[in-house]
Amino acid sequence: AVELSRRHPVASWLCAMLHCFGSYILADLLLGEPLIDYFSNNSSILLASAVWYLIFFCPLDLFYKCVCFLPVKLIFVAMKEVVRVRKIAVGIHHAHHHYHHGWFVMIATGWVKGSGVALMSNFEQLLRGVWKPETNEILHMSFPTKASLYGAILFTLQQTRWLPVSKASLIFIFTMFMVSCKVFLTATHSHTSPFDALEGYICPVLFGSACGGDHHHDNHGGSHGGGGPGAQHSAMPAKSKEELSEGSRKKKTKKAD
Image (cartoon, rainbow, N blue to C red):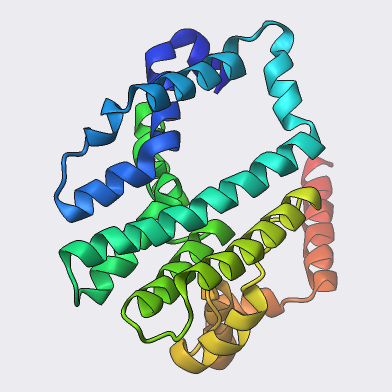
């Protein structure tokens, strides 16, 4: 990122703007509104540009060191989750205004409002000259992306009167959940998701295997195949491999003699 900002400052600035306003761009794309509409907000663009400049070009990296100081970073993390929940609620309300009975439209709009930056990560990589399709956020969802999806479902149920909870109460409860989880994960430098335990019970029932369990599925199939070459190779004990290598060394020694 630092090298990109030095060599290609325009590309670095565009990536920063995508990180700041990617959720608005995706939501406008889904609802058929002008994608560049949010960039008419001059104050937001200038503020984001100032932060980008201070992050990369502040003398002695003072600004970066200040925001990376853990107590300060936790404050910003908590503030970001407050904004995330508000964006999910506003996005679903906006989608409900256009599609009163479009549940999936409301869920999709709320989801991209809450995690649009992560969902646009591959496009942002293209701006930096990098292409890593295996890092697709939909294939490997982070905690904020999953939480935004579940939150969008809850707020959609509340908006359509299927969840008997007031919007203010739901916003407060979900905000406290998001803030506490994200602050804890950041403070402990953990990359696990609070949903892993729940998904470990639900996914085998609904989908036949745990989420992200491709490796487990391959091993499971190999164990039932029995006679495949892969299974035989994995079953080969370590001692026999050592004996083979020792025998090959002895043969080479005899040939040398």
